[in-house]
Image (tube, rainbow, N blue to C red):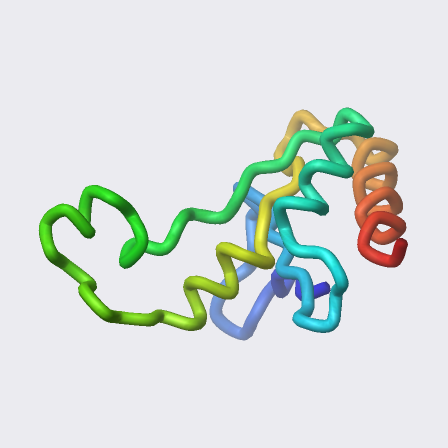
Length: 105
C-alpha cells in the first residue's frame, strides 16, 4: 500500500481526505477493497475518475485515442478512507487494521 507523506520540507499534510493506493502486487483493486470495507461499515470514496475517460469530454472529441497510465492506475488502485476532525483515535486504528487485513487476505 502507498500512503501519503505526513510532511515534506515545504508542506505538512492536513488530511482533508486520506488517500490509499494499492500496490500493483495486491491481488485486489480499489473496487473490491472498498466493497469489503463497506461490509464492515467503513465508508470509502473512489479517487477521481480520469478526465480522458469522462463521457462529457469524450463527447466533445477530447482525449481521443489517448492513454494516461498514471491516472488510469490511480483510478483502479486508489480510494479514500475516513479522515478529519470527527474521527476518534479508536476509529482510526479500526480503519487501519481493517484495511491492512483486507489487503492481506
